[in-house]
Structures are given as structure tokens and as C-alpha cells.
Figure (cartoon, rainbow, N blue to C red):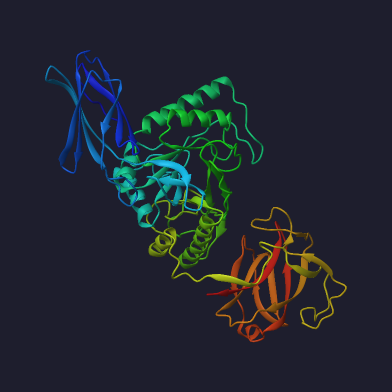
Length: 544
């Protein structure tokens, strides 16, 4: 907060709208007590030198067009800012002057060379990858300790190879957006939402007239207050049904009020087919909706990989959408997620992905950084490479014996204890039931249940044919909740306790690996469950 003395006649504010198509800058200067006979003088500064100066007569409080031919375009790779000097004069006497800056950039929706609807930056398809950024601090909650701290978060976001972030249901101080402008980071700006929420797929709430009026007033003030920052490329009107009401009307108003940016009607949960993007949330994901003729497909939240960091936790309790063991494991799982993201970029045509999240927040241990910003929890170079779509050094797991993740695979199963030799390849399982994987209860995290299993134990058997060609590094691909033991051709291949919330690779014991052969092989699985959700599915993958 500060006090600033001004003259009787002074410049109050300015509104800056770049127009790349017309090679112009639309500039509106608002002033107080400006004489009728005055001139508005606008100087564009390039580096330390004036680029050009234009004089407009009697044009305070009215839009003027500042020519901008052959402009350098702003982007995260080249965040070029032009200086602006704006002066109001009367009969040669300067009444007031302010300094500002601007950038020439355009955000829009359009088609790529294949006809897929994409988000375009400066007229070209531009794939956006960034973190969900809540902007919390352990010592100040919503208030950063210093300007350097604000800058550091953005510098680390860039170091990790991101080109965008989604500012989550919080409006930051002007300096945060200044550093995004200066350092080059696209911003999706959420509108903070009060009132009641609504569950996924359940539509909208009806607000009181007072609540609706206050929301719309604050939405307008947010857009007005942060309008001049070129980093902001999208307004997110609602998040996950929080206070969501009159979605189509509010989104249409947002687009009309600020046609220079994209509008996202609802990030996750309750899409109302309005705005410029269809935004879904998938944890851990990734996932993508299909691009539409006039709306791009975006993944507004995914990931949330958790790792507690001793000495840097807010409380003894912590959680993430999927747990990891250490820095190496966290980085490897992140690379796998991003490989999936880039596959979705190609098909069906994903335009952006937002990973949860920049930092740990209190009990949330799914940050790229710890809550105190003291520890980067992943290997920075590998994360940056993955964010840019470079997986040259990342092993890929190819399913050679498919799991039931995408398509249910046939198994024979039994729910009461079988004879001791149940896992042998030549065991007679003709009386066992038949069902398609995976087996479990609906609602178990990450589960794709096709055959219900509610008892304490399940035994599974399945024959498979190994395709021709040498396998580089075979692994089991397993999703289990809880304890599991797996046999390959009658030999114990792996055993694990506890549970997973998604499919993961598991090493095969050397003894079992030696039994793998071309042609017919056999898998046998026992899973034991004690509490909570339950699920089991197994396949074999080759790590290349």
C-alpha cells in the first residue's frame, strides 16, 4: 500500500489492448480534471530509446490507435516488453505523465494443419503446460514475504520447463503479474468463488440476487484490475462447481467484456458448452476431452503426485493423489504422466495441461516444491525436458500382455480358497468362474472395475501368448489393493503389500523371468483385502 501525490489534473488509469492483426495498440487513458483543450502524447520506447511518439488532440477518456508495425511479438520464449510514456499537456505545459509498458501478443482459438481446434498464441498453435498455483505461504498464508519470493516462484516455474500456470481461485498483487510479464509466463486467471458448491454432473446453483450481484461486481473488478498484463491469456469463470451459477450468461459476458482473451466457463466437473475451451480434471490422469469446432480441449488439473519431505512439512499428516517413494520415483512417475499428456496432444488434440501443483500447501504434499520453497522435489532437468515433450532419455513401458486398463481381459477366478497347487500352469480350473478384469469395488481410487469383487480374497488365473521378438526388460504391470502375490508359469514372480492407486511396473523375480517363453504362458494372482477399497489387475510390459 502506498500514497502518491498527484496534480489537480492527472492521469488516473490506462487500458491497453494489443491488436496484432491491425498492427495497432488500442489505448484508452482515463484522467481526472483534464481540460477540454489538451493533447495526449504517447511515446513507445524500445530498449532505452524512443521508437516513436504520437500526439492525439482532446483524447483523454477516449480510445486512440497507436500504430505498431513490425512489432516483436511477446511469448514465454521471448517476453519482449515495450516501454510506454503517456503525457497529458495543455498549451505545451505538461499536466501529468506516467510510465508503463505493453506487449504485442494475441491469444485465440483456431485450427491447426489437420483441422483440429487449438489454442493459438500469436496466430500459431501453442501447447501450454503449467502448474496449478495456489499462491499460499507458510508464514503469510495469502501474502508472500517479499517481492523476491514472488519472483522466485515464477523463476522456478520457468526453470522446470513450464510455459504457463493457472492461478487458482486467488488474485495476486500486481507485482506477481509483472514478473510473469517480464519473465514470460502465460497465466490462466481463476475468479475466486464463494457461495455453495455443486457436485460433478449436477449442474448449477441458484444464488440470491445479492450473492450474484457481488460475484459479478468482483469479476468485473478483477478483469479491470489486471487487464493490462499481457501474461494473462484466459479468465476461468468457475472452478469445479464452486459457486457455479448462470454459467453461459456469465461466460458470454466475460467474452464480450474482454474479447482480447479466452474464457473458460468451468474448469472441471460441470461444463456448460460455453466459452473457448472444454476443461476436464483427471487425477492422476492424464485425460482429454475431444476438441470441438469452436472450443479447444484442455486438461485443467491432473497429477497430484505426493511426496512428503522430512523437515519441510506443515503437519505430520500429508496426502497426494498418488504416493511416491522418493525423488527418483516421483520424477519417473512425472515423466510417465507427461508422456501420456503429449500422446493426448496428438490424439485427440489436447491444447493444454495443468499439473497439481507448484508447492506443497499445508497437508497437501503434491507440490513441485516444498511449502517453504527450500526443496525442489524432482530432478529439474528431467522435469523440464518432459514438460517440453522431450522423452529421449525416458524408458517407455509397452504392454505385451495387456492389462484391463483399456479393455477388459478374460480371467478365471475363485472367491473361496482353492487347493494348494492352484497357481500351477496345469491346474484344472474348469469349475472356476469367468470374468473380465479388473476385479474390485466401484469407487476404489484409479480402479477400472468390470467384475465386482467384495470378499476378503480372490484367486485369478489366465493363459497368455507371448509374441515373437526379444523383450528388452520385462516387468509386471500391476494395480493392487491390497496385498498381492503373482506367479508366472508356476513360479513366484512378485509379492507386494499395501495398495496402489494406479498401474505401476513391478520387477519380475529372476526365477520366474527364466520361465518366460514364446507361445503359451500362464499368470496366477492372489489378492487379499482387509479394509477400504479393493482392486486387482495384472499384465506384463516391456521397458524400452
